[in-house]
Image 1 (cartoon, helix red, strand yellow):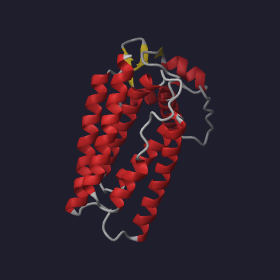
Image 2 (cartoon, one colour):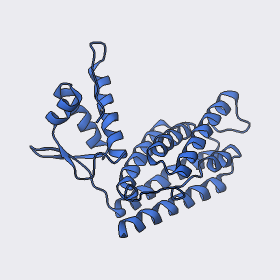
Image 3 (cartoon, helix red, strand yellow):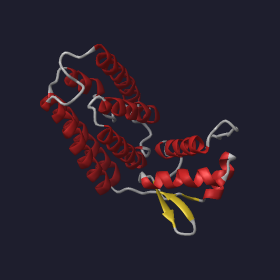
Image 4 (cartoon, one colour):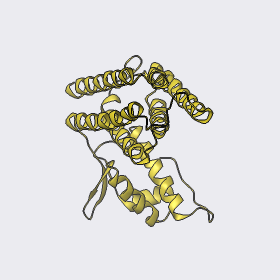
Length: 233
């Protein structure tokens, strides 16, 4: 794992977040495998930090569903089943449907016409989508996950409900953790990964809610079929 060096200027909460982010990246990259066990002491020694921020970071990741605590032994990376993945997709759909409904009801920031600030933000989201698409086309899963998470985080923020945005981000991290353990079995992911990010942005910019829902439904069906196939193999 990459090292993290603390300085006197770094607060404990910042260090806690740095460790949590680094470990989350290790899980998403597949370098920490499902079921892999470790202790607070091992992680603290690996990063060269004290046990307290490590323990706090591990507890945070457990609350997010990425790790599970083993009583008196430490932690392990949580293992998800295809059934778990299906439930995550269903939950994600409920959240995105609520967001898209805000367009219909007029409660979203994505009003017509867009103000300059919202238009600039949406253009930034589209750029994230373009990068995600390039990574998907190239089969670069690690880069795709990073841009995909940023894409959805920034897109959901435009709907004006921070609680929904946070919940969706958590679900997307968990669903990527679940999918990664299957996707990493393939040596070549080119042409396998979903890459409809800019289509979705364009539909939302047009306030075309039916098209946006259709795009997300196709994305979810693609993801479920892929994970089911890989899990079966």
